[in-house]
Length: 192
Image: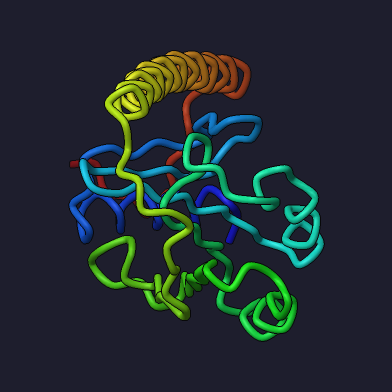
């Protein structure tokens, strides 16, 4: 499992299970970026995705973990981690911000929905209760649009690469056939 798998599960959970209308990845929040950020008219939340204990520990050096500022921080904050890291993260969280939540993800527990392996181990408390401002929701929409455009460009590039690879394989097969001649038939093969 990598961070993209975990981000995708979080995005699907927030959009389809929680029905949050505004979701984005790599969203700029003040001086930091949120791996996953979501909001509705009443609240916002950030999910920081960590796939190693070392990366988890490094996150606490970020400015956002100092004093929450309603202008620059979400209402709720979660760490999303592989289920295998649960014990170590719970131990590391002792003495940290008690309002932070923990989500675990087990990619082996997949069902028909991408987020089925995601479990909220510890619910996040409120960092502040100020609802998202319209400017924040607009910034999330802009980020969502950028992500859609980026995925479309990546899809088109993948399609182009696939066509190039297919063309090169066809050319290589034709070259092989010219060098080797037609494929020999076994003496016992029947002609249809």
